[in-house]
Length: 276
Length: 282
Image: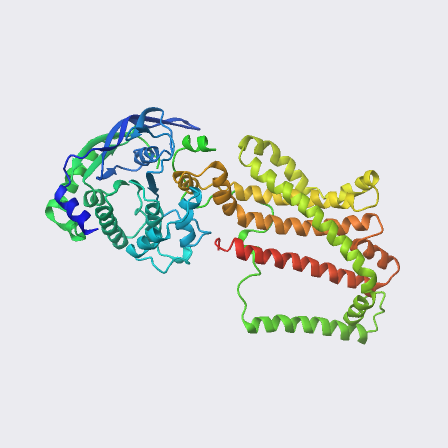
């Protein structure tokens, strides 16, 4: 594990890596009762192997739609998404998703929740791996607890274990810490940074928090709303591991302001009600 | 179903969205109420003692004749002395109830599971199911007897018709509680449509399914006894008309006591099932 950490540090954030996933001219229209909604407009995005990519944007900009499409949960109206040579049209075993609010099944205890992916894939449960992950996120000994007995942070840690238990190479995270309080959120951000550095997974992380995006990401892709498109991509070359208090440093705040300006600039004043 | 997911705006509900049109008890009232202390249980027993003892005393004090209202002790005595004549009828009633309920509940459950997958079909069928729920199926018994005779068959059919729609309409409410995020979760791990049904939809609907089974079985008991009172020579309902015609009131009330025990047993059974399978929804 330490070797991976050192390698990661040596490689640096802006290093050129091979392509993990390619989104090409992704366009998506939703049909609703009041007409069609243009959710994604010609989105092209490269996810590099092993990187931490944050997709940042205001509510309703289509960032979750984009992520769900990358996970094979949505069809595109036009364009395509590829994982290596494979076109993504349905969920892929190399990809795991982490959802808002942990999304644990309330009728299953922690152990049964984490065993769900194995059940669905009809594979024997990899208890050794699960135990190691549970210890890593400090949930060891809580296996018989039900989700309602756990705090929000513990629930989300359990959902991280659930996703990592099947050893995917690409992790798609959809505003996973949005419902947590600020302190727990900082803890979770640190944890996910550590897990990323230790495991070498590729992570795509959707958020509407600018500082969360800068804290976590190698690159931040800023989306603009209605229709959703990639406005700009920022490289974040802050060395790792990044401590939580980095967020109060002037140069960090400068980055926040810089990105904020780019979002505000891209917004049209009369777009009407956004749908989240 | 997989396709439909892709064409909705992904504002999947963070909270459970339940259809509000289930008939019967809400999930919360499934239980026997809050936990009771030993003191409260003692009071409940004390109230029973006062009521039984008090009515025994008062009925004797005022010399109320047995054919108007028998005393509790006369009822219990009748239950024991008459038991050998009553229990074959008890078996008939239980048989009709169980078979009728099993048929009705199975059909109701399967219909609910299938119909909720097709919103158009559901919209067309639901008014007719409501009609079945609200119309007392007892009304059909004379007609059924005319067709099928005085055996158990017409009563079994009436019980199935009474309990089935009740199970269906409650289960359908459960199955309608679609949580797109949980379905998406299962799909992201490669779940098939059938796995989504067994691992997500059924557990999610389980609290309402249990409510449906409970209400349906109580309705079934009502219909069984009612149908037995309409015609035929067997069953506890028949014994009620028989004993009241002969003005044998202690025996009459003994049968009512048995029916009360059956009803309470059904309730307690589903209470425990609910505790085991639906306790996650507190």
